[in-house]
Length: 82
Image (tube, rainbow, N blue to C red; front, side, top):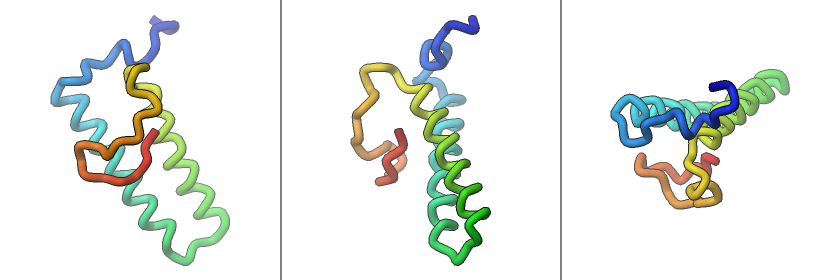
């Protein structure tokens, strides 16, 4: 199972996965809004790292045919996620 790609382990149409994806997208958007504040370099780096980790997770979960598709998400976000 360690060699199985993440996307192969996910039931992409399940309500559980959709809830996880919605949460991750919401976190990315929240962190991006926080980046607009006057933050220290360390705080900025931490937020950028969190955003990067969430995007990496979402990218790993995508079905390979979907990679590179920059269409708007079903959640109405214009945030390029993956």
